[in-house]
Image: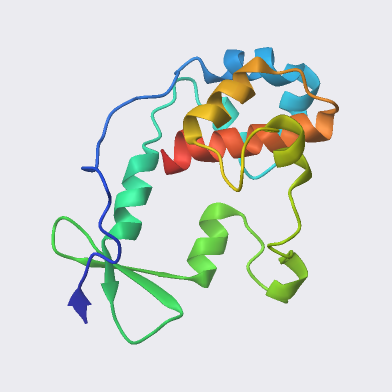
Length: 165
């Protein structure tokens, strides 16, 4: 087993609170109370009950960058700051995230040539990708065609603003 940083970030890793701690009120303004309840039913719902957002998504990013290279591809090994090695298998990952981690992955794939309906509708001038800043701006504007669009945009916003930062 050897220590390796699989992908060197373009910028220095930062820790702090670059996000709005009044997250729920911001969410309600942008997606409405009905969609907040739909969001609450997703795997990210428990985050809505955190009184003040103390979650450091950057730590998750750092952990993934500091993965140890080893022979077992079914287990993620991460070297802790105190020198011990943390092991996360698919069972632990499933338990922590609440994601379904079994079944045929092809059932969840889509053609890369198929354009995203959300992308086309809410980012009409963009070609192939958008910046995080544009995603945040568009989310804060609100005005969704339907609750499902609002929910999908809320999930994208949440993941990019809090988990991936």
